Length: 117
Image (cartoon, rainbow, N blue to C red; front, side, top):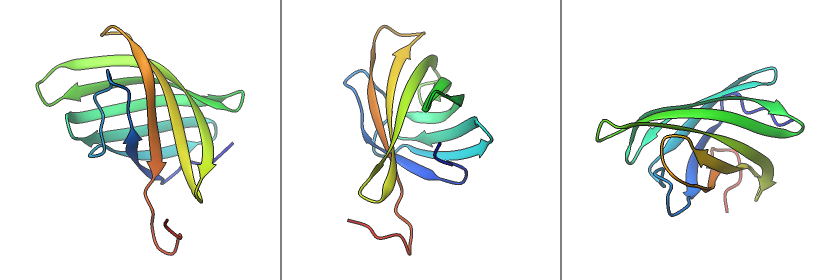
């Protein structure tokens, strides 16, 4: 289980029906197996992922307020991997308030003295 406490990530990839983008940043906190991420940026005014580690994967519920005032929600299951020396989350999401599902990719923001490619 990767410890995500204090990790900041950005969206490096999103599905065609996703609304997060490269301007969206996520701030993670973790206590034991419980993980929370608050996020904002791009078309997202404010959002939260709330979940836990289950069987080596992260399972989340999420809700977000978008810049147009709409509130949307869904659920996701995430694979957490190491990629180029940083943590990467591959999120498989399903909308509950919209039609569809897809994949988002979150990458850890590079911080000194961490090497960046």
